[in-house]
Length: 353
Image 1 (cartoon, rainbow, N blue to C red):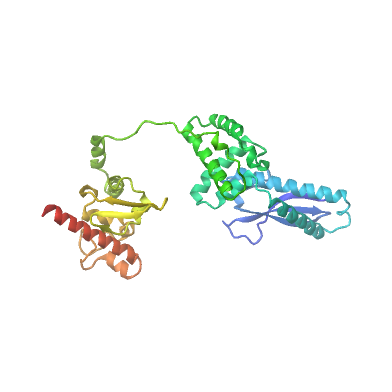
Image 2: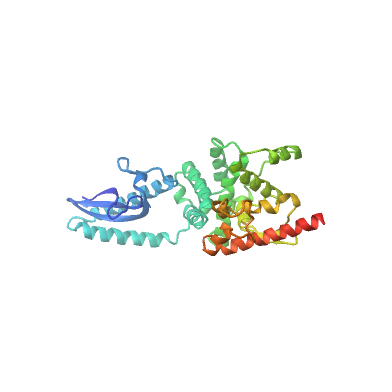
């Protein structure tokens, strides 16, 4: 008889590094290991309960390893009934199990079920987007225990309506629930594009957004916020907030990648959508003396320049310029700063001339 048990292989694993999770096959005191294609930190494995803990995808991973173990247990049961196990060594048994698993994988490769497609679709997304998709998957798996065997045609209007009722138990907000349905719809659209399915339940199941009241600040409140005195070390964060507002809500990552002001405007492609934006830089948006605070790589050199209030342009003994020459600050970023500074200086000259 062959028994199976999960085994986190800590051999040759450095402290703080992930270890491979394996399934141990044991016969008459001899053991062979099968890698389950999962690596986790030792702190993420509960040895007594034989399950993954403290992992962002623990629900999915535990379902996966249990299904994999059950698959191997079923294989061993069939091999035992056929008499194959009786006179075979544990090494021979492992080779046969791996062969049978490979055959099953080939058979499964022609199966494009909804669950597998959803996970593959999520896996190629950015990490932040992937986490959102995995939240949807976890909610679906909690709702439908047979999710892994579902064909696209089974995720129909009725299934979606029941899923919506399930979500309402913990998420009364329709707009919050819509995030999950948009994720499901995206997977359907992708599968249709690849001719995996022609079924599309969202022709009948509509995702309806609920209008919410505008939550905007009055001009008076904005002025109060902008002029609120703060501690010195918080001033640059307040000013960064003001700048993002005055540049029509520019995303922080796009703000950090701005390179030049042309004719009083900043032009950039938004990182998230690759859409081109052209925004006028209003006089209130920036004063040239404050520009240096928008370049965080300058922070550690502030106060080290020869002259107090150094604007890091033509002053001698400038610590920032020395850092650029030493390669400690990107030359391209510094040139962007100078370009911005001189354009703002020219705009100021035109404004008061």
